[in-house]
Image (cartoon, rainbow over all chains, first blue to last red; front, side):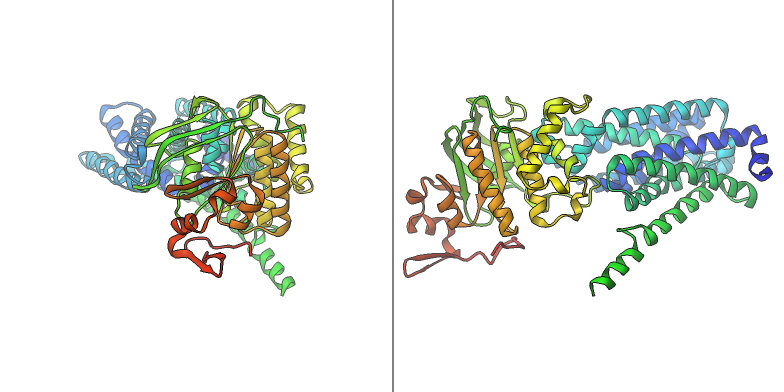
Length: 282
Length: 265
């Protein structure tokens, strides 16, 4: 069992593992709504749109996470503003803001010469560089997001499954949608450190899609998704340690392996099972 | 039948109501009064504004001109007294919810967003499922049900909502005979419970035989009253114009065109 324990003798590995599991879980849980509501594009766009916030924070010498948070909130609110009352379709608004924010971020960063290393950390994560203060912030935000999802379970379920019922129950659907966007933005910001901007969409979608193939109720889907997210983060981090590969990609590839297993071998929804069913019917 | 007793039966009052959908006027200056506990069939060709009218009644589309009153109060004053049964295409059947999850959603308006459902809620949900003949399916995901079973899930949810006004959008389209019969039995139960029911349909025979009131619609109101008063060949011609064939006194409506993919016959 030495190979399990040795990496944990380093403090940076302990912090990295804690951060990766927290991020894996929170991404996987909110990811269930991302998958069910078809918000994958939105999640990816939000992740790229926080780049200018990070750049400004870096230029001013502030906390990169707080800068990212401010940018993510601004973009989430702007998407809500542009699509309010159906002025623009959501994916159009997302596409415009996503490209503009990413360009702004690149423009700001290109003004700094020595930024190449940090930029690659932002794009692909640097889970082994998580500081104790950032870990505390990550934990705080992760628990906040999970708590809100738990408290708003029924309203979120109704606006996702049946917007018409939401309307007849006089639910403030617009406000709930915006709240969900803000939670998504928070989640993406804390994922910056482990998987980075480039790969966060995978952590939002892949564990949730895996769980979707294996469960029949939303609470079970969320729990299983969280488990897939956490286990992928742990396995991925060990792979990254022993194979000396980038941690973010190791985590995402592990999650993808779980997804492929579910896709082929899931009872009822799996490809193999459906082949068998079809043969029986034939 | 104890689940849908409304304290005060509903009365629905439309005054010069105009509603637009996708920039076009879909419902044009309609004024009708529907008495407590009435059952009204809304009949018209595809695109006549039947669904649009329903969506405005639940507050999903804005009323551009005119007013809608429920119990004499403007729309939106009463929370949760209108239940809507959507057309089957409007629901995401791949969503991970079971039959009893969906029916329990009908109780959300009653018990708030944080309290857990109590014995009464659970009993009402079970009774609604039994009344619709789907209690045995309660743990099944909705995506695994047949079309008729899926419709019964939403009928059961509407029952659990204990509404004063129930709106059903094309409940007789694309379902099996036994679901049609269950739906008709439900209508007569609702009548004794004093629930006002509006049903959109393009089945003229169904409208004439099962409803005491018919609203004939083609963007504008063509006629409103008893089936005998409404279904004159002149009115039908005005409503269905191109789609109507008059064959030796028998009225045949050509329903082949438009966006209905499934038919019950």
